[in-house]
Amino acid sequence: MTFPSPPRCICNPATIIENGVEYPFSATWGSLFGECIYTPRQQWSSFAGVASLAGFALAFAPQFLHNYRRKSTDGLSATFFAIWIVGDIATFLGAWLTEQFVTQRILGIVFLVIEALLGAQYVYYTHIYPRRISATSKSAAAPHPPKDVSSFAASLIPMAAAASLALLKRAATAEDALPQLTMLASAPLCNTEVLVGDTARTAGIVLSWISGIMFFSSRLPQIRQIYRTQSTAGISPLFIFLLFLDNLLYTVSVLLRIDEVSTTKLLESTLPFLIGSIGPMVQDGVILFQWIKYRASPAVPTPGAGDASVEATTSSNTTGKKEDESDSDDDNSDTKSDLGRRDENI
Image (tube, rainbow, N blue to C red; front, side, top):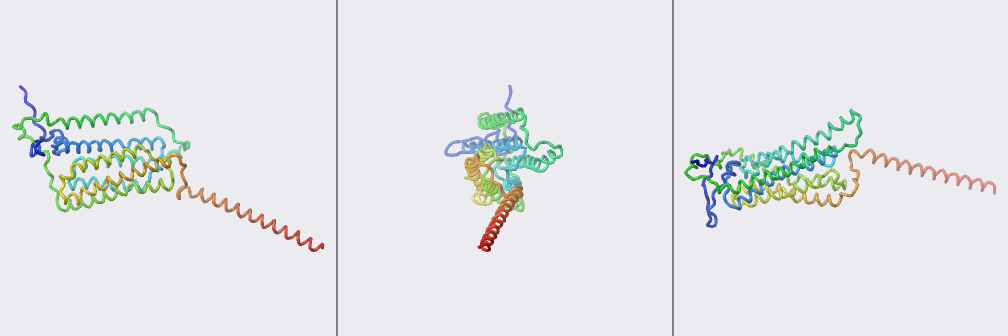
């Protein structure tokens, strides 16, 4: 005779009653994430949070491939990167110090990893790759990557999606296979709270608001750059659309459990994370509109690398105008001279 093994952790309480219905905790979710989930609303919130995690991890793949094919990141704003990096660090620290929902805390880690990879690509194609091309006297035209690289990257998307769905399904059905309550006493608590000092918590609140402000304004430099150049050549529309969708899922995951957050915590630390997701979601919509509007338009030269050519053209035009004016003066002088001779003859 075999007995079911006890779960790795339990939730206290083991069940809760909502609207007259008793809901047990999800053993799988508690064991994996250290958070207690009971009701269907909490489960939907968790599903949306996990979907946003998987989505953010996959959202950057199109932009990575887009940069790799072009061998350039010149379509992306450097200010955009700088704001994003500061926001990611503040998100990671603020979410942990203020004890936000577990998906929010994990997302901070995901953001740091992705930002490090994207930042490395930005530095490589901006500073290292041009010098390599110059040193080897190769053509400036970027070769296309082998097809197997794109195929391998594309194959990761359904694999990650399948893994996410399997995890969600397991978490949803875990409560049906709970061991008997007599075995729960030997397991530790899933939702053991980590005590955070007042100083650390205050720092977490400040960092949370820094994160919210940074992410709320993160897309503005990119929107401005697209408007000035009237071109979206360096932007992957799929990347922006996935960011829009992921921010939507993140917002939904938080709002579904907003009633569990006290008013004080909501104003101090949860609100900035909502601001930092709703703001970028709206701005991503603006960038998608710009992509539709400017996708067939040639880039307009902007102050910077193209100034020399613009100044040269302006100088050339100015010189041409001066030469024309000089020729005109010479013609007028000749005409006056001829008239003078005619007067003398008369």
